[in-house]
Image (cartoon, rainbow, N blue to C red; front, side, top):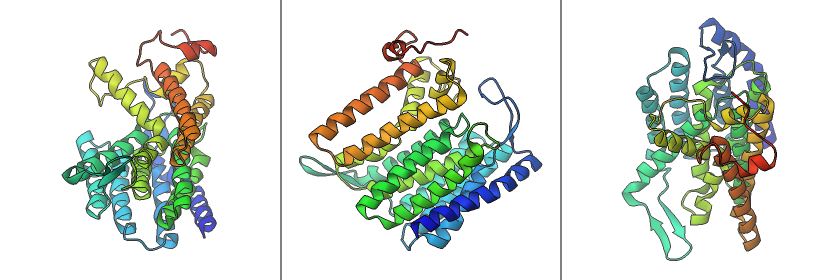
Length: 348
């Protein structure tokens, strides 16, 4: 059944994406090029609608019964509607945030919350009244983290696929059937869209796709790893290490430069890799590799032994160092690893 669900959603997305492309062009839901973007012509940006339709169909047909299914579907519908409106008429940030908060609260009020973690020593640590705001920040944070890395052809879809594959694989090991089926369904839909979205892209996923994928990943991570040990609590953070790190580095950089946190810029990880001289596909593959390293770290961390812990620490230190050097958060001249491997910033 898992394979059938995957193939069904993959095929549905591949089949309807060309229709979505024509629809987006018809209603003028197009992403125009500007100095902050790398594409040079108008692109249809409603591709996330194909992912959403595929996931909705797959969940209604294949997902086993769970009390979490309907809140997840309702929240996903709210996020998708918010994204579609933003892709068509460009919502104000406060309206977009309102949609994200509403979707998150639907899930949280259904009982999906980070209520406590079991500390290695001293038993459980209860979050109490903070469980709702902590869970709310997690869902909104991951939702926007995926949106922030959606800057190159195939980037957000690929990172999301790696995260979904990792979450689903670990759910298999933990025997969580609902997360397994839902994860496979979203993975199939995302990979189907990647057929049209990898370089050179024929369509962008837009906020519809980026927010929907971020929302689904954030909730699936909660369902798979909530109320567990402190070490396991770190697992979903590691799985989403690249988008979360890029988001945090972006915030730090803008604070240090006295810029508004929400102000778009041209200094995300993928922008800086392009400035280093990497081609568009090379940049995407490098970030895929970093995402895979973080996901590998998460899997090893879940099976933590002394050796695994050392491997995880090495992977994280290396990956984070690369991201710090590329993002220039420590300054333009701080580049020990990149200089050693011969990557120098191209002259502007």
